Image (cartoon, rainbow over all chains, first blue to last red; front, side, top):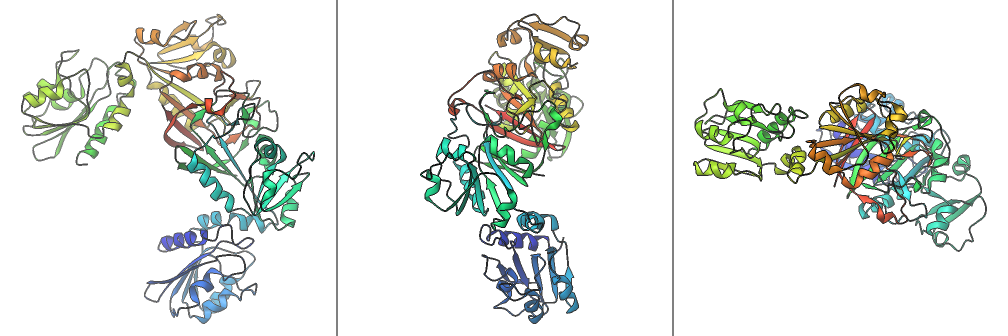
Length: 312
Length: 312
């Protein structure tokens, strides 16, 4: 309990690196002096730059102080020297850690140097913050799906009218979510139906039957890869650590069994038309218990709409 | 602000009469003595019994005291004598009212008797509590729809498999909601598909093509009326002040334009099958802007499911 608020601050600091640090984890850090007064903060800003601990410690002296950080400090040489060395050099007396970094021995090294290490503070929240990094440790790309539906689960009328289901606030937040992911993935069907720009540094389009000409709006910006098949392993090999699927019911449905997270924007409106297009439409079932099960992680309001977030 | 918590208490007291007081309003009352100490409470328990104010005042003396009540006290003779007379007789100095009763002159009568009247405390919450009573004042039955869907808006597979979409906690709360309404309304299609009991004192079945035999489970309990058409005026003439629709997509959809409130239980599961049955399915639209618009009133968790409540 004692370090919960400081750990929350670390998480908030860490989030400032969202979309910039891949394949590194999101890390924030707070340093207290020997009297328990906060004297410095830091976060990992982008891939290749200083780790959060280094950023917080570089210009200060804090003998006998406490360092709070959401992820176990590194003890290996990467793009930057090990954080544990700097923590020891700065004579920090106590390190408070949110979650372990399983490929690491940082906590062990700190304890060997006589530093008190407290682990597991708000571990669940810290794990959620770094869900992409954790998934990547098993050699897999983190896969999220974003959809925007009516109350009756529709994303468009039967003839494709879909502008706009959700309001401005929801759509703006949707763009913020997009920016957290290494790449976005859509289908040629979506590109041909809506000819969207989908601004992003990396875009993947699934175009099974080579229907695209390359003249569509989506090709005019960023790096675009056209795939014939959805192969999640290939994404990881390409260095794409996280992908956000923004597509119709067919592709979103096909990827559903691989999804780690679903962002479901829901507008409080009803089409009342079962022939309108569903958010996930990729199979026929005969028993309701064949439904795929998720957990509700959070419910947020954006304007008059909701964002429901589901995880496995 | 001073009386907000006492008004909240009145609302909670009033709710204890839910399902019992129709066609009367839900009313709760708190009495403070001249020193501001709470000395009595009351609520309208059932139709024909004492009003909340009478119930709170009968056995006490509170000269110079304050009476807090969510609805303007009555000044007319009904099943019971006017509450204003008793308030004056008990020498109450101040009456705090949540919302006005527009068919009434209670506040005026109290002021004439030299009593201070404060009106409009938590008025919105008080109006929501008595939404049925308010609708009835315009000569119309309050109409609510309850549905239980997957994330993709489905209530059953194409061949009718629907047990169960939501979990126990949600279904139990669904029965509590049902008890608040004068009657429930369903369709012969639902009766024939699921043969449900639907325990309730008053049930209405829409059976356009006389498909029911009267031997179905639903006929074994309560008072059952079979209609050929949905006629909302007829409900009011029958003395049904509020009705809860529990039916499939066809009837729920047909009634949607008349609905004052929708209870949407949503389980975090996905059928992924557009041919599965939608919660509202009664028309074809070609422009997404033909969707019917609602407002999200509240979001509650029941077990792993959500209850989303929409109003106009």
